[in-house]
Image 1 (cartoon, rainbow, N blue to C red):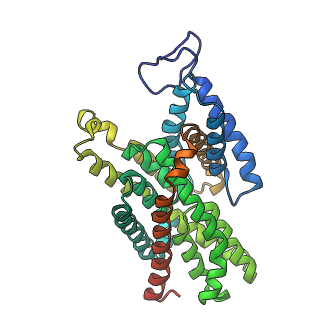
Image 2 (image 1 turned 30 degrees about the vertical axis):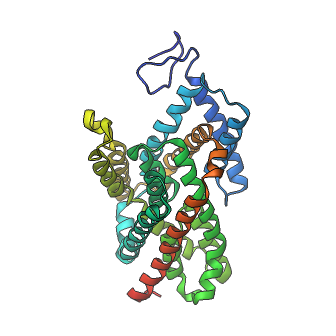
Image 3 (image 1 turned 120 degrees about the vertical axis):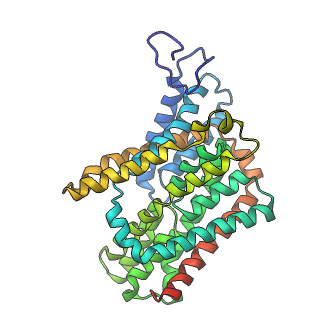
Length: 357
């Protein structure tokens, strides 16, 4: 579908009323993503996705009328999230995940349940919108921004709900990256507990960059090389696979809701086929690795996935009014704190129960 001859339109809708090429909005998101990627390299603890979100919000404050750019922005905030999740599957070796999962799976399962239960309880107590609670709950339970990216299109969350959830998850990721090495030493972890701390970091911190920061700090504290880091990242990748059952469950539950007319009229649209593609990418990685392919082969796919997330976060920022977020930010922060505390305590408790630490 085109708006002008020789100009490609990125608009996902069948009928576009824009008088200018839809590519303009997408190119704006692309430029923001490039800037965010550069900033993220210089300040990795904050990361590119948060910079992309903030830059998009800032531009929105300066330019309120984005009607001519909106079709391209809508494409970036919707389709690019799905593509990012699919590409995330490349590099996830199911054999390595299952090997690590023998020890970590009970802890991972318990922390996921704890986060989702805390989100459901606090959503009722705080009277938060269900979709916001679902996004924060799944982000806390599984893998932060990636889980939110996978969940948002399934539950039909709007951009402000996604932005708010990403902001909450980001805050507690930063707190965990800074506090967990100190907390680990205070509660009794020692140099010989590298595997236990790696399991703690991998199950109780959401974002990969924050897991990396905390595990690297622990290795530096006790001169362990990269032993803690490698184990923590593998545990974190194992958690990522929970995206598959989570999104499928949400798709089924959404299709049965009375207000979900889209699922009734077009059932195929409510089913998250992109999650099946994500699993297919995992299978391809596993087979290729079994045939001797080096892990570096999949690095470009994962890098592209991260960049697609930057484009999507830029679009979400452009669609978000930061003043609305500030007015409604207190309750989501409390819900995020409750989820974070439940995951942290459950991870430590399960390790004690299983005799890991």
